Image 1 (spheres, rainbow over the protein chains, first blue to last red):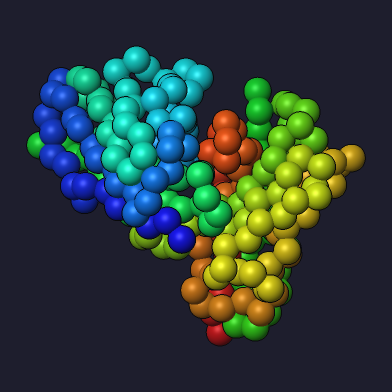
Image 2: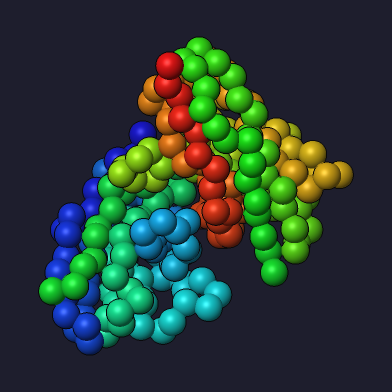
Length: 107
Length: 118
């Protein structure tokens, strides 16, 4: 099983600042990596797939990068609606696995 | 608009059974592989099971293999998850999800809550 880790567990950021979230896979997942955003009481929402392709309707301030075992989600200028938990997920191998999440909260 | 509506959750005793359903609308259901993803209270996301568009290929997490069965009825645009031998650790919100690019998860339902407790 591919183990996904995310850092930091919590990221405190002021509105308008840049946020950088990291995701690491225990073995290569190529570019088969997705990012999701989950707000309290809501279902997750797909942000990025293929490591760097934004899903339909996702604002351009969200960008993904990386391949192999190291990945990054960058939010260029945090808006109030971006404070949430972010999960990465690999879909290169079965079983499909998620990281534990990074909570982005208001500084 | 693609929509997914789960149902069938509730309170069940350990060892009991439950069947979840997910009604799909707004897209050609048979064109999409589908999945179930769950989230225990206060915890992260866990993939449970996936099924191909035609229903031929099925995949399970080790934690549910042999106890859960995923299926679909493309004539009814409905996805199912039959859950047997339920355990306390199966307590979670269960989300029905379309499979997007690769095996990423594109569209999510609002979820249905399953509580396993005596």
